[in-house]
Image (cartoon, rainbow, N blue to C red; front, side):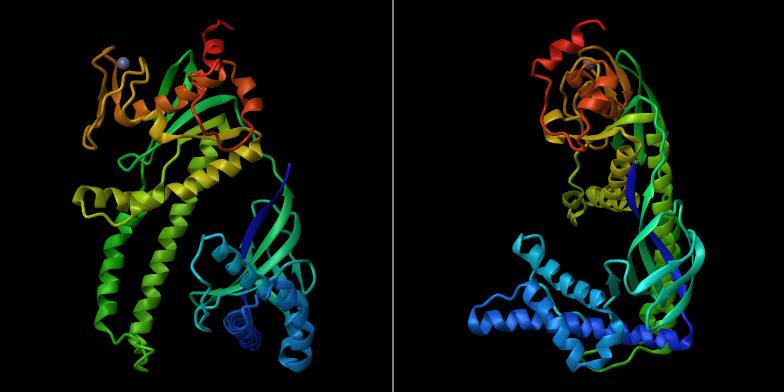
Length: 419
Ligand SMILES: [Zn+2]
């Protein structure tokens, strides 16, 4: 199976190259703002909307009028216009606010949407990036799997230049034929219920490394020092002091390190889960709602932990990794199934407080950890719903998201017939 992967390399431009990169970045930013203001004013004045194709036609004119745009490459220019269009599309769909002008300071970079204008001189480990009108730039980085390079995005972040290259490659990922239900929590990052046979499960706990908590103190300390220095105020034209800049650099370096560590951990966890289970089931969580600042003190701690383990990223990892391995990733509707209230053995419902960490069923005397219980409920729901033959499930549930309870449907009967 071939997929596209993104590989990011760190660039090491020479002084002259870096000067050019900054110049180009500013030109792209100018173009972005220009295209945005064109659309704005034409709507405000004439009630006429300008679309991407109208603006694309202007690329030739821009390149003729402003000679400094020539070395940028027409495809890269088109892509910047596409970014404006994309921002508008998201606004029209109600996914984002009205597009805003970007500052030169925070504009990230540009993209080469096809093979023209750049060439990656590498076999996946370090090498050089050849950019037309700029020359060869040394780069460092390592791809897990290298393939056919497709697009390249050059961006500037925290004092460094990077090239993010998408490659088309063949993916080899093996998986077993297990079923696993996952409960994502704050005490234990992930509680796995691995299906053994006939509704019996084994509990595997994956502890939260709490990188943030460890590094938090250090970050707190450094940002406190930062607050004592003179911070910039661009409206009042106050420049930041050199010491403030230095402290700022330290803070952002620490934050980057923590986020890298966290990503690494989540990649490892998801790879481990997928390596032996082809059917991965979780509950649908609205992380956005849960992390919204809460007045409730107990809940605030939960919010922090949720951010700490970043469930959304873990789910994305699980999704694409199961897809690559040919398995399936399923999310069950939380409110319908109520995994935290249901007994995995007898379906008896009982409300629990957030502080209750043990599941005990009055109906059938079954007792186990709270997270393990809900992980079992999640896995059981799919196992019962789709029939006991797991190999059959793999074919049927090839779609990545599954919604709706099938317990009440005729499939339930099929699970009771001995196989
Ligand atoms: Zn029970």
